[in-house]
Image (cartoon, rainbow, N blue to C red; front, side):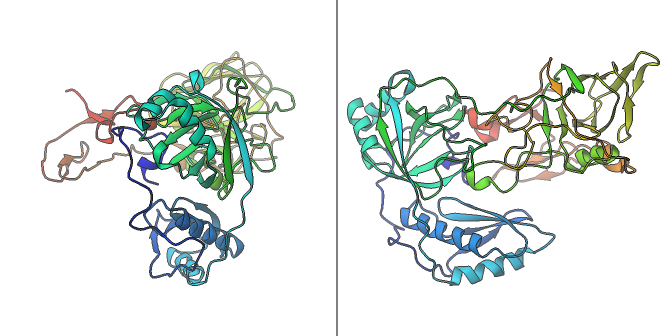
Length: 499
């Protein structure tokens, strides 16, 4: 999905967008899509995209949704999920079961068929408190459009919008299309944090932020409706194809609504003394929900995480701790078998009988009651994994225990661990497999050389030049937590280190 279409994007000059319609406008209603006209492109080695067009047109989006329903109704072997967008359909498959050529052939058969009309969507009415602190950009939108604030509210609430697709955040529906007189470009400087429930405008689209997040759209109001509930049978209130109307309301809007449910108390086995830099509960990932805007999450280093789980006899995708940069400090409240893998963070097990003991990577270690596990320094790698026999027991949310920090669900109350937290464990298996130490230890660092058109860059590790101007250059990361929240252009996300 091009960045210019994401709510978090920015850096554009505020201007009136072109009039809707014109070149490329499709005829209304679903129709067959010729395999010769559709572009089928690979997306990595486990997905492809079927591109039906390049414009934001309601009729084109209808065809995308019709194709999506056809794929879901006739799944081919190896299909994992399909994710509709504006004018394209992402198809994710298992490369161990089907090749790109096989997946493309299966889709070609569907493209040649006459598409049936997609299902009629549900209708929703969303009450909105416009303006004031709930809609801080309403005055600027009114000035840009040459309208009064009252007229902006009236026209925004008068239209019925179609959910073109859901993405960016869990439950964030891209609603179109906005009346021409209300179309405004995104903010030049995105906000690092947009409150949950904010109703926003950008170009020909409008939408509601289900969760607090960075964003660059113009905020004109706020609603207290919960747009995404991971514990509901239908987590996303608004889905692709649904119709939405906004209703001006004077009801006060509460602060961020809770998004998690308390889980039953169980016997704590681990006490968190210090949460470290960023320590979360992760597992193999939350699969099959990207059509609702839910990312996979899960291990960032699957090989290391699975090596740690195997060392203590867990299933490979069992829930464990993922520490970043600086690991946690943990106190064991009962005898527990654990293992470390991934980054070498200088782990030490403080034992009253033997004193400090260095913990090897990839080996099952037994900690006694009162022992403390500390990670004192980063020696190699970035992400370390701590697996406990039996796995960490936290609620299963949408088929996974992985933490989604943006949406605030999964893992330990949807957040990183902090001092005072307590972890419970499941029942341990009888024995552990012999670990693969080649996957348990940190691998050699990865060196990336990013080349921009018309420029010559040099990889600092290999001194190999690329482009048109060669000069040895050393690069360090730019301290930006989220590119979506920063107005810095992509060319400055990495900056040259000072000698």
